[in-house]
Image (cartoon, rainbow, N blue to C red):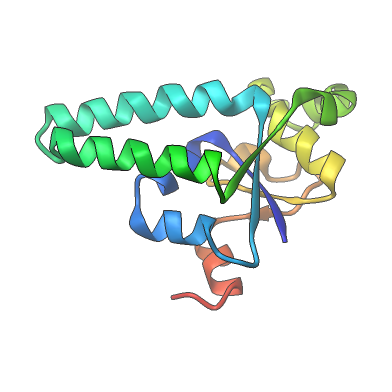
Length: 144
């Protein structure tokens, strides 16, 4: 199943073992709008810096996590979709997420691919595309 990941939920799951395992699940093809990838990179860096500064992870663990994330993008798991694949849906997508117009890219990509959106953000409710939470997707895939 093709699932479009919202940037915020993707960042959270990339930082968790269970999230990385979900991303690698053989039934899931996780895609991210190119438009949102810089947000994902920025937020990952920010959260890892906070975790390290608070002593929640070591510099070595941070490096391991950064490597795991890069591997997921470069080798398997997460596919970055170029803007040209979904930009024709931008106007309609912006209308569908009026509370946060910056969320248009995942909606446009989901429209282009006829896919669902993995999110924890209520702004996507009612956008006309199926939405998945991490918990419901895990349940659907038979994980606990």
